[in-house]
Length: 202
Image 1 (cartoon, one colour):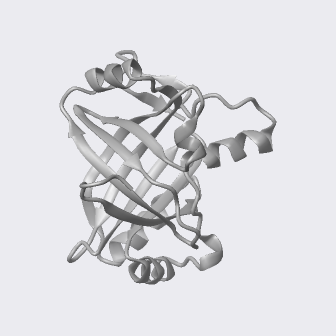
Image 2 (tube, rainbow, N blue to C red; image 1 turned 45 degrees about the horizontal axis):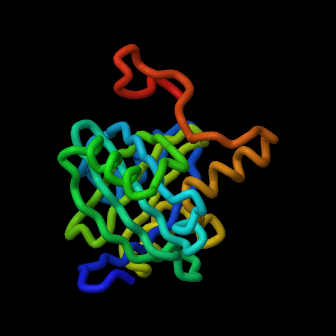
């Protein structure tokens, strides 16, 4: 782990959802969840060196853009668990272009891009959050919080442990491509708006 830094431990699972999201939205509302951050388009770029040393050590370096906001994230290796559990460090970016340029100057280059629309739900004392993700490979609900909160919330939403997914979107995208026997590229939406600000559909 990095020395002298404050780390956050991220514990989460993904749950696969159908194309029609009306039922899960209704369930979240009945359980007292309310929209904390409105639906927004996110563009993500993972960086690594030419030898993929970050990936080999189970680490992830990411630049995320959502509207005018940018976020730089470093994540550590995932622990073996039914949950996806790993340490992470994050900092907000005022100039994502410059950070990407700096990363490339010191030997890190884009290795995978992925996009999604995310709606963030929370309730009560914010013991955890539910993240509704619409991606090019389907819809998912991420539950992020303590392990007991995740277990309790997943059960209330009608899911069991067999539904838990503790893999990254990169892994899920590769599995998606293997199933369809297509060559993996980047996980991007097919059509984009005329101003280039984001996709118009999957």
